Image (cartoon, rainbow, N blue to C red; front, top):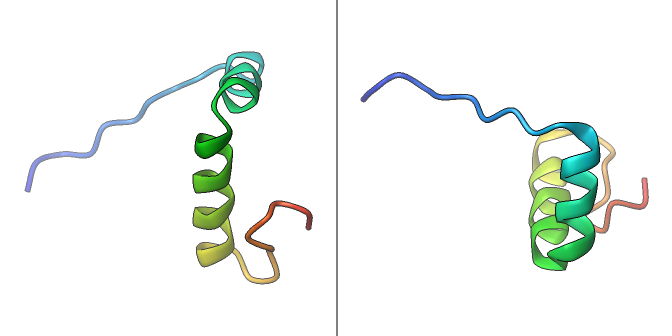
Length: 45
């Protein structure tokens, strides 16, 4: 396997993307819920 690459997105740009692409926000919320104890899949807590 090759080396990992990191994508940097400025906070304001990420906020705009999440507002414009609801499926991206949903996917990120679900990913966080899988990896962060106590996080909810809908991003509410």
